[in-house]
Image (cartoon, rainbow, N blue to C red; front, top):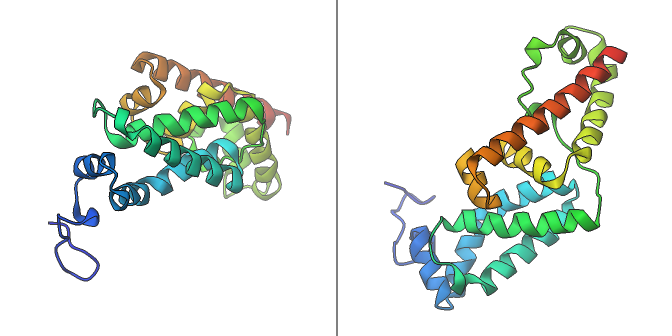
Amino acid sequence: MIMSETGATPDASTPTGMLEGDLVRRAQRGDLDAYDELVKRYQERIYATLYHMTSNHEDANDLAQDSFIKAFQALKSFRGGSSFYTWLYRIAVNKTINFLKQRRNKHHFSLNDLDFNTEHNPDLVALISDKTPLREAGLAELQKKLNEALMKLSEPHRMVVVLHDVQGLSHEEIAEILDCNIGTVRSRLYYARQQLQGYLAEYAKST
């Protein structure tokens, strides 16, 4: 049983203790407190996704706010075919993709966010290993190269990398968010990783 911070069982009649479906239904009837609770539950995850796509705190905040506003305005059209957060993610993702088509902002992406299977690439292992003097001098430059490589990907390919490798969403969830089939998600993710890993391997060999 879920307990509140004070040790009391949450009151299911209040927004904080309600299930997502109940909150959505109340929000659809105009209950602002219920919608505020939905915002609180998902604002950090939405913001994190948008920040990883834009590499800009202000842009991510603006896009997140716009996404929640648009979601509220369109809330009556939500029929529950998917979870609310998937529906909300789709709104945020579409807004971000449109934004990035107009503004090519630099993206900051951590090497730790991606599973490149670097243990199979001795050049990359040498470059980022804690046991080599190349690490301190080369890691910052490698990060820069990764950012540049990521920005060369199309928005759909970059988005699947962020949603899967950073946010930890499943292929099925990403397919719902991007409104495509699972096979498309997998192929985009594979292509994006191959492109990024190839770019980094080429850079490592040149150092």
